[in-house]
Length: 193
Image (cartoon, rainbow, N blue to C red; front, side):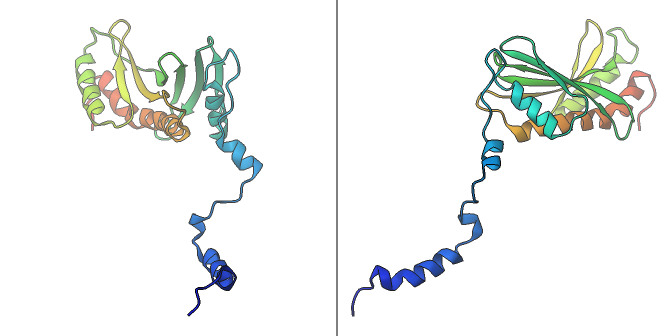
């Protein structure tokens, strides 16, 4: 019996390659798809991921988002989000730093609880309970002025993770809306459900 030649196997090779699952075959490359996946080079004198943050906020259609560089290594963005349950408008800030390799997101003046307030102890206890259970996000309290913030931190030390950024931008507004009524009742000294 003779060994098969490449010419004799050609029809079988063609059938085998056509039968390969689509996932095993790379998708056709298009200039638009390649450009969408490649991070843009940072603008000289601008923080490394400022342009990426702006692009993601635009792609997410975040209304009223404004971003600016504060220096060559830091940037700020701001936008408002309206809670679906509360109808309340929350002001969200994003603070990016090449120095710390982080994006710090927070809801400005989420609540106010003065250090000597009658309900502050109960509120702080509930905030700590929530911090224990939250996977993404944390509540912060300033004893100097009583500001309560809802905050999230994204690390950017190795790259800018678009999915994590989008998740945080969506999640901070959802969490703010979810817990506002309960925490506001605590601040006002009303019983919670």
